[in-house]
Image (cartoon, rainbow, N blue to C red; front, side, top):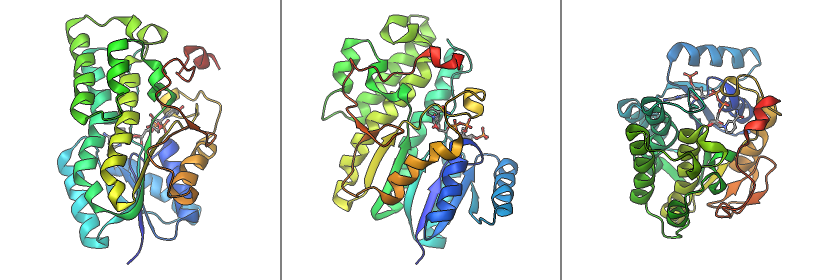
Length: 286
Ligand SMILES: NC(=O)c1ccc[n+]([C@@H]2O[C@H](COP(=O)([O-])OP(=O)(O)OC[C@H]3O[C@@H](n4cnc5c(N)ncnc54)[C@H](OP(=O)(O)O)[C@@H]3O)[C@@H](O)[C@H]2O)c1
């Protein structure tokens, strides 16, 4: 049976470049997935022009029915999968955004990965690899609130506690009680930071859960990359940004597990809340 790799939100940006790299290097079937069929099929056509031939399937990570349909498809056609890259995400619409938009950011960037965990992870075959595309906004040093720093630093952190963290944040947005000093950079892009910190933290929880099947689960900050998300700003092209994710799902030792990895491949201490790894607004000037 063929090996199978899947990348969520891969019709453009870094996810698209990861699919491109997988098509070149992975010995198996590669799935380009997107929430919008037209955008997804256009992306496939672009790769076809390069002589690359991913499979396509619709997948909106926030739509449970869409995830269930994709699960059934994978099960029937391939019996499972070997590589999963949770890449789909959005940014806050404004520097300081509304409750509605904050909820959307958390739903797409974090809660959807809990749905993937529930529905898709059981299909990941033993010795498989899962990569959560996080961010520098996903390092614990983005947070200044000591109560939550302590809670998120617990080695036996539970998903329920992470859900409490995002609920605390969303409630504060709803009630207008958010204290900007609970985050770096005066709370700019706080929803994105909360979603990505939660994603990095849940990576460690997922790793524990999948340990017995020798599946690796890591998260990565892919660098500051020129995509639609950054309105074209950044230090790297999408192909450069795909290199370390490709290394992690194809080449890294299987013993690398539950790590928070920087774009240059260095494994960082995610728990070092005094570190200087958070995203700085001054980068947007570049
Ligand atoms: N670019 C950077 O500097 C940077 C830095 C740190 C981390 N990251 C992370 O890298 C990953 C890729 O970002 P990017 O810069 O390549 O962004 P991008 O170009 O905006 O691409 C994001 C992708 O996610 C998809 N998506 C959004 N919501 C979705 C949903 N509900 N279901 C399925 N797909 C959905 C988008 O689809 P549509 O086309 O339909 O919107 C698009 O394909 C993200 O996780 C991002 O947080 C990026």
